[in-house]
Image 1 (tube, rainbow, N blue to C red):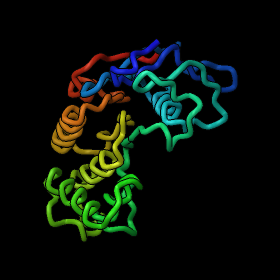
Image 2 (image 1 turned 180 degrees about the vertical axis):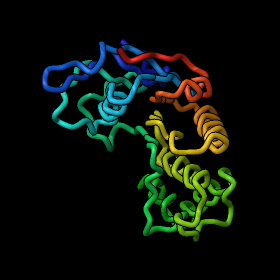
Image 3 (image 1 turned 90 degrees about the vertical axis):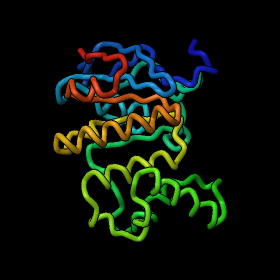
Length: 216
């Protein structure tokens, strides 16, 4: 049984299949607070579906087995909004009809009350991501790297207990990719968030710095 005090995200004998065909062999891994674990494999091997299972958003066309634990507690029967898991995708998914500040505000939990307190957290996130003074900007006017940083800060403002990365660096050019990777992993480490990265790029796995598992 996973250790409740460890704060880790753990998968025990997790496997997925569709139409009776398994996507990969049963998987047992752990990502500990402040550390990243990488799952690698080619396109179509089930990497994104694995993250969907962890989040609680797996399509009903899949059959899933195995358990997901966070802080020693099983997540299997919880709805997505009660799992406290943040996820970053290939696309930043910022709301185009909202300003940068409003996008960040969307990530704040409901228990953060009061306009002043919410604005304080948004301003701190903008400063932390080197975007101070950009709260009123249209996301469409930001660079790719700036948008990626806003997406990460919005996720962190929600207070996730674990972070999933679904190849969020794959659409960035080489120089920008390196900077954004460093930014993401540094913040996950600083906030002691267990992180699970799925990728097909060995450079992403190297930047994550933790253990690497191949889906087979």
